Length: 530
View (spheres, rainbow, N blue to C red):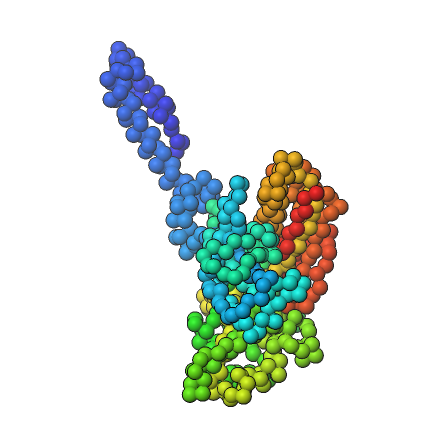
């Protein structure tokens, strides 16, 4: 049914009345015009509009012209919910050039943020875990390269969205505590995504219909993509390039998934008792000097935080705490190098790595474990020492594996393993010339370079799995930022790497294409104004 306008309805009513009596005056202002023509026409116009709205809201093909609420109501019929925005995350460093004299905590929820400028509002972050400075171990916090005592802490934007993807060296304000420290982020905040658009929600809903094909690639893909934290997915079966764990015999399926930040969950002694051990229990949980994480895959963007404390008893009147804040870099033997408490190993094979069956673990330095038995020195704490481990893992992978293992979603004999996509970090460097008005003061110059950093960060972080990035893309993105006169092409440098725990060296590149099970994410973006 065609939507009719007010004028069309008025004309039709006038024609009808004049057919009955041509002498009736239907001019504007006449009673019959106001009461019998314009009044009903207005009501009918609203009725046509309501009917059209109902028509639009009945089909997902009209997603681009539907209201968010109408589309949410429609897809709810299929068990689909819109993906909410996810907050950006990064690591900040609390630092001071003056040696602290006492112990103190930076508690969970400490608020830090960017500075407010004429062109941008403040972006506020909060710390995700409690971090502690212990004066007795001050040497472990000292960074000779900067001349500062430093404590790293993971932070998350208070509000989800791409506005939280701020550039490096922009988080400089401590908002709610008077600390003897300053704060800085040496890397960009990444992972902030906006609420799912109507078009993306419609596409995901249509893909979910494929899930009715139980046990097929489309069936697995549809089932996974229907989940709200999943941004992208890839199903690999027999003879596919990434499938090696079937030994060429078939019968196995890997589902690689890209998950937003909302899928990452922190596990600590307060919300998971399996990570809090008395010493005797802890020794029994070790395979030699190896500790396997109970919930996987472990998030590599933030290292585990491990502490040991002695509970008060007859011989110890105070709880004493020892922090294991010196993990060995991946691939460096902790015994030969000395001084390292443990090595954190993140599995990176194409068999079970990045899944609930991953071999993510901690290998302890035997000297550290032996020392703990008599910590503090001279006092046997075997029965009172408690080990607490705080770490993050991808909870959505666990949820997806449970979903796929449901007999309703797979063939009973199939071996299907859900895996998290591998993040490839891209560092960017470039020199730019700014228009005179945009470098008139240090503040305007800094704001413009930060705008370039944000534009590049958001561009790369919106990629799905298996996408390609070229230097020309970066040049164009930077050049499109207001105030940029020129990008020095010869200065543009791209470096590709994955998390250092994998032990793979960074590589300078002209362009890069993420493998089918990888996605690109910004690391450090450095823009220099000449």
